[in-house]
Amino acid sequence: MKRFGVVVTSAQVNLRDTGVKLESWQHSTARDKIDGAKIQSGTITYDKLGSNEVYIRVLACQIEKKTGLDATSTGVKVASPRFKFSSKHVKQMILRSSIEAIPSDAVVRVGVYNVISGAYVFYRDYSGSAGEFEDVYTGTMPSDGDILEVRAEVTTPASAGTFDLGYASLMIDYGVS
Image (cartoon, rainbow, N blue to C red; front, side, top):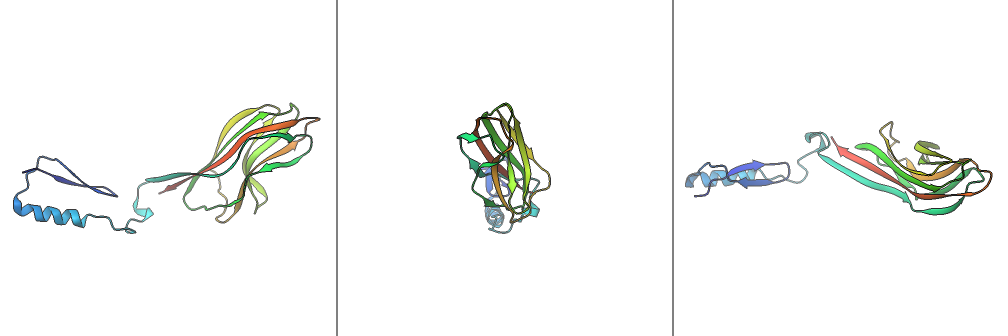
C-alpha cells in the first residue's frame, strides 16, 4: 500500500510520499480531509495573505522612440496616452527613460504627470547630455481615479537644435499585503 501525507497550500492540495502507512479504514478519512481542504473561490481575502504574496507589475503607459523634437522652446513635446490611476495596493512606480541626443544647453524633463493636480508625481531631468535611467518612486501616490500620463517637456530651451527621445515607460507594481 502506498503511503501518503497531505500538504495544503494556499491554492492547491498535493499528495506526497511521507512514509506513513494508511490502513484501509483510514483512506476514507484521508479522502474527506483532502476534499475538505479544497479552496473555494472568494474564501481567501487579501488580508489573510502574507506580505506581497501576490505581486504584479503592470506597464501602464509608454512613449516609443521620437526623433527630431524641437528643443528651442519650452513646453511639452510628446506625451503618452492618459490613463486613470488605481491606487489600491500600489507599492511603487518605475519610470524607465532614455534620451539619445540633446543639445548641450537644453534641459528635458521626462516624468509622470498628474493631469488632475497639474503637477509631476516624479521625473528625471536630462541636462545637456544623453542617457538612460530607471527611477523608482515610493513616495505619496496619486489619488485613486487621478489621470496620469508620461511626458517629455523642454524646461530650459536650447539656442538651436532638436532632441531624440529613445523611450519612456511607466510600470506600476501592485502587491497584496
